[in-house]
Amino acid sequence: RRESSISEEMRTSFADVMAGLGEKLDKLTHRTNAVENWISDREDRLCHVENLATEIHNLREKCDDLENRSRRPNLRIVGILEGLEGRDPEAFVGSLIPKVLGADTFPQRLEIERAHRAVRPRPGPGERPHIMLDRVAVMRKARELGTLTWENHRIFFFPDLSSNLQAKQWEFTPVRRIGFQMFYLWGWWFKIKV
Image (cartoon, rainbow, N blue to C red; front, side):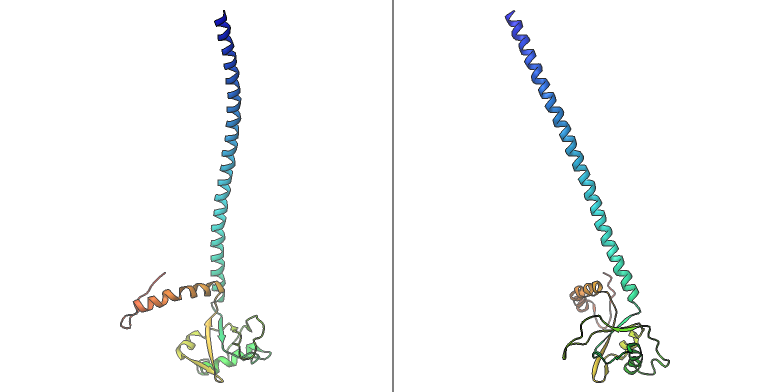
């Protein structure tokens, strides 16, 4: 009898221990499932954020491309002293371009849609004048003529590009120089696509 009472006592305490372990295991399983769900939710959110970051990058590239496409017909004229354009910059640029590039280049009157200074504070004496913008296609003639001067000032024509594209071009300058040294052989150019 004593053995059976000890055996019964052990079964009861064993059952109590097993019940306690079962409860703890259930709680642990519940917490593990909650943590797994939380991690899964965070992974989904991280994936969504990464997709949004990629989409934002692509949209910025597209926006920059569209900005540059809208600027294609524009030119930047550098080297014109401040205030020479007076109150009518369109008429000033319309008369300046034939004087600089030659009247025979543009026999008809130039139609300037818009001309203005870059929006910045007026430079002091001795500082470089602001860039003047206009919407006329004269780059080809400017390249043909090479160095351009007007009233003893060098005038430069540049395509109007966004600041992002200009920064990319500046970053590419060392590569372009190396490429020029490597691929300009005996007067022949090799096309390089980056």
